[in-house]
Length: 397
Image 1 (cartoon, rainbow, N blue to C red):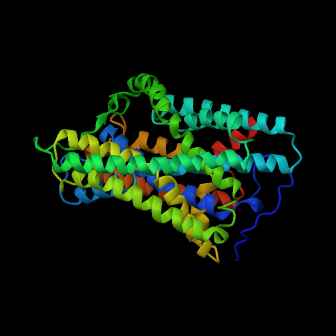
Image 2 (cartoon, rainbow, N blue to C red):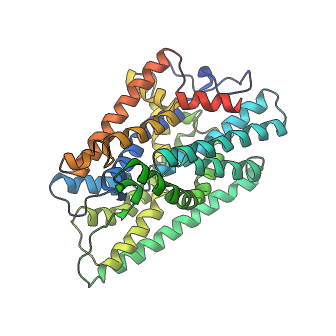
Image 3 (tube, rainbow, N blue to C red):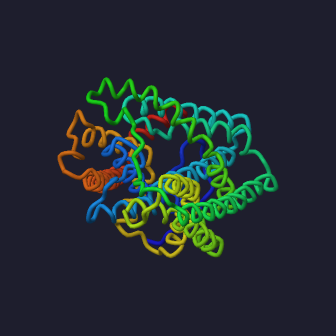
């Protein structure tokens, strides 16, 4: 089966039809749900962030190192980029079907308002670290302020990211100086506690989530700058035809992944117990890791774009992972249900039963992702949408 990279024009309003889908966005979302699972399952297992073993032994050192280098603060920006990309795709489909600008705006506003509602329910019932509500808020901001701007205006975001590179370099220099001049006692990475994840009963966890969710949502709204980059990319049709943008994708992948990996490396060495610095240095390296992590968004997206540009036939794994990407919201919510059942103190509490929270988080993340891939593929064979996508569609359209 040969992949059609150039998509036909939409023939109707409403959600995207299967024949209109580009491979790259779906493959990105489906694959990156594994990294989201690795981050969130560890958060549950350790009842805190970043969710790493503070006194690692043996293979736990490797797990800490890989998680801090490639996952933490690096997976969520991918979905922020893809959220912005999806906003443009949705608006484009509406316009191509003859919808007026006002009608397009109403659809986008309604969809994002429902995302806020979905996020509030998700955060209240399952997991304070919800991103759906924050994306809904950002989506409304983008609909009102960004989507209808011209190409010249959208070049601003490229300048912002160029300045961000300068800022990361400055943080890197500052972190190196702080680490080299470290003189106090060695300080390990400490997990900032999340009370809702340590609660001894579901009722107590629910009450704690009501306090934690608003603060978490406010903290991730600045991701609008990452979403804006996705809007810029979608206006260029980069992922619909990645082969035509191979040079750009290669440059973005090299620059962005170099920044995000090198920026996370010092903290990863501390987390693995291979670098010993004082508390001030750990704080400085944590800031470097967090800020450089946003470059994981365009970096991972570019890598998958290059991968898709090389694919000529759809293998079973690619079809299955892409099927999950088409149902990414259902997959994301399914993960939260799984973490609650597998890792919460008042359920199976596998983090303690395994004797190693790191091993439990890893095993649960991989197993749950594989189950969701298989489930999504089976649904695709029967032309079933995910339950969350079906409900959102009915509410919006």
